[in-house]
Length: 455
Image (tube, rainbow, N blue to C red):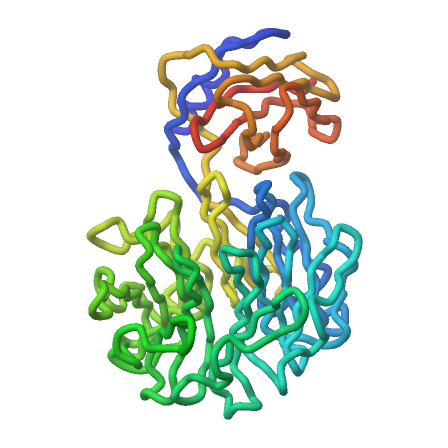
């Protein structure tokens, strides 16, 4: 199939300048591919946390072993992973990093610095958000999320309150409690925070006050109240991960002791917590479950797959069954701290500690460079010169305004990405080796593909 697609691509007519025909995109031959270099961090990492900027750039926060176990954030600039500000920017050793973007597009990181702290990147440096170490004592399992109004909230296991769950928010002046501190029935592990569409904060966690099962609570404006039964899982739960479906239903993924430590996902149907598909759908034990929804509304789970030498696997629910997304165990080696997120263009991406690359950070995405061949259609796109030596100019109009540009080699590696917002954009391709490259423009209305020759 790939050979046939190569031949068809090479038969696409190309103009030296002016407008040329592009083809509708029907993804084929999908695979998991590295985003930039695998093992891109300077050294070993812990607690990877992946998020996308509003412009579509992937960012990863982690605990950085070569910088005294402080916090570091890197982003992929389209060609390389680069530091966002200084590496090791936190004041001291950290753990349990959680990365999120504010509505204005600033990256924020929450972490355990004994006590909890949050920092943001102001475009030049990482600065504290409120007081450094705002929790009363040590805090673990930090989970950072923004309310619809733009306030940062942090959920954590609160050592000053018998390791129960606490949520705090920054009110633009100081960090304040959301409801009572230590509101859970017992010790709360693996806290995971998310907001529903009306702006209510929800928290999922492993609930030692209810047989170490999964519990979800929400803040009703006055108190934290249970969503359905507390400890609703059939047995103990680890690695709880909370997300809302597009229809605003809360879903929780976790490692399920009731089914041989395999992965289970449950949702709240308005009355009860019910399994999504089969409980224990993974082939074997599933650690570090990370839940996210695709733009089309499918729940997807990334996890460390003990059925595949502790490599990373991603599965999705197709409406009837849980099915693999690409190859199982696709990472180079054993992994930890899997963090799943979808790019604005809808690609599932996973960050993790990569045992196949000296425990450094790696990010992979599920994607294809091969476009299905359909009838050619005229578009508001001009590309010139083509062939090119060092630069190409892209002119867009109509549906192609504000699109994500990707330039990909025939091996499937994404070499250049750029958000196209201007009618005319010049792209530097001088670092690309001579050869054939595929170009794709993506936004929420259309996908266009073409071919570029670098001389």
